[in-house]
Length: 459
Image 1 (cartoon, one colour):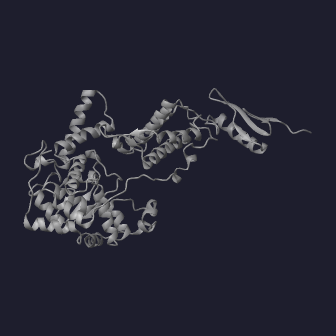
Image 2: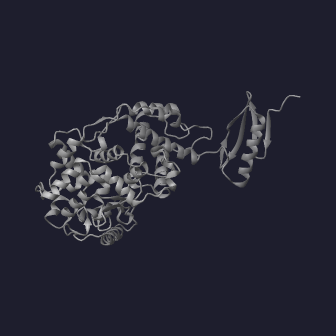
Image 3: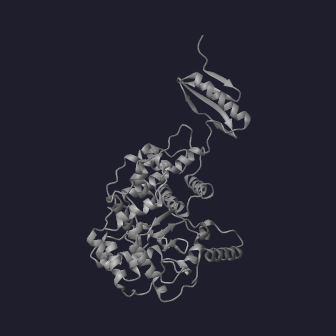
């Protein structure tokens, strides 16, 4: 007796075509005919599973909803905004990166449906990325250049996450592979990345000696604490800086529209010369941003006594006024924009201004190729390494993750979860690393001698 070439289980029919079994069923008014394979028993098991899901109204195991990639991007970004609550800056980076894929689709006539986008299209996208030119950091007046390898990898990683989201939401066929996973992104080499350059001991001394009285405490703090520029600009008196206890606290301030990049708060001990320099700079001031714009060394900002409480009340007042005028609830991005206006009126110096001042100083000492103040954070981390500071303490001082997810970065794994670092140990190791540095020598000399340069032109 010849084997049967078809079967039916409830609402699902199985058919044998050229030694391959196919299932046929209707779900939500659409006909589906997925390919199963040569094994009849596997086909019958899958048909029974799908029939049970159809009878209960659950999504069938092999059903999916193809959508346009542009719509997929919007759903993905909305998921990060409304569900995961990723930071506004992170969502902005995701939007910019995935926008390259939309431009590629629009410009080349490539398929725009998730159901038809294949690995071959992803490979074409990589080739296209290597031909375009962009402005660094999005500055419209900058000279355009090709994308660096690191930037290309980041774009592809974002697109991989985008399509992984599509798989979880059944926007790709159950048998379809993530087209960007098939590219094996981890094997793409980074050959043209920008090399990180840090000061030598003589360059560190020359840099600080070239600082005027406004620049000196700012860059000395970056050198001796490893703060990110954005963290430095959002330090508030008296909550974040305690000179009597010689500690600096990096805290999230969601009520003031700002959070640490990694959301990891930390407390950093301050060595004596830095405390003396900050005390001399701040004088009797006990409220507002620790570092204010140049002109506020001679005059008061619009919000002269801006403590955390008064700033929060001002932000809420401005948001309420804006919502009353708009007749609608403001988005998170609009709320953060209003919060930035309050920080501005309190006198906060912008991160971009720190970068400009850094570039002026590096040009002065003959190092025009050094343009990123973040190199001072690299210098801080390198000094901790040179002094053999405990790896866990290095992670804590830098504000990096110290849990099991970061085992590859510090090699401690679960030990990090059991270890509680004493603050005295952290201070002792930090002082051992920083006290021999030229920056400390210059700080002591300027504080002891009272040598101060006049501030440059107001900004």
